[in-house]
Length: 255
Ligand code: ADP
Ligand code: 5GP
Image (cartoon, rainbow, N blue to C red):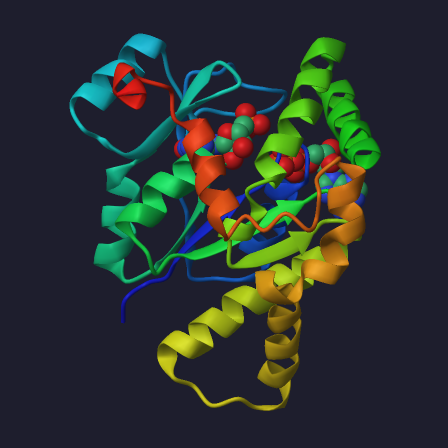
């Protein structure tokens, strides 16, 4: 049986790692891809557990050797998913979860279009900043400039939410964890062609509520709190504009 590739993205501080850790402790059969990064370890992070921490030189060498499924620069550091993670999960027929940013998500989706994609939103900028600050305090390094940068960056990431299949709002943690679990179970049920019973019926309802197309009303106040116009339709022509604005201008653009 082929494994499912799950991709989860979120602005930094939304609680994505917290959600993913809860999922991993409660649902078996899912591998977590440990990314490579050039950023410094935070708090109690250990190389080989949260990330493979490496140097820019080593990372660039891996890029040259085409060892990455995707890679991107985020907050001035390189991050990448090794091809090997996907290869190992595929060979073992296990599900795989990638925790990557929007740039990485686009690269992977263009190669693996049937990946199941999830976007995690914080309830509003104030809560996001508080979470970022609490995490920094716990790690013993509050950098106000960095907090400001990550909060500003959050808006840009959130603007891409409509490209994802499922949207989770991480307000009440237990609720968001239950939603994440339901989505995983429902996607497995679909893959296996299993019939719906009483328990899976409830999971199906929860997962359906999280579908991007069913989330628009629920997300309106959140988008507005980040200064995003909820009526902008990023799936229409404006979406193309959005993509275009991401692409650096070249001399060919003027021709
Ligand atoms: P991310 O992986 O998205 O950068 P983290 O999982 O590190 O974010 O969470 C950022 C901070 O917010 C952590 O201190 C975490 O304990 C806290 N947090 C996460 N989810 C919630 C929640 N639903 N309610 C309150 N605090 C949360
Ligand atoms: P952090 O430094 O807070 O752990 O992560 C910063 C951002 O980098 C998050 O949005 C996270 O999802 C993203 N990220 C982590 N690993 C990867 C990766 O392998 N590839 C890409 N493209 N982004 C990653």
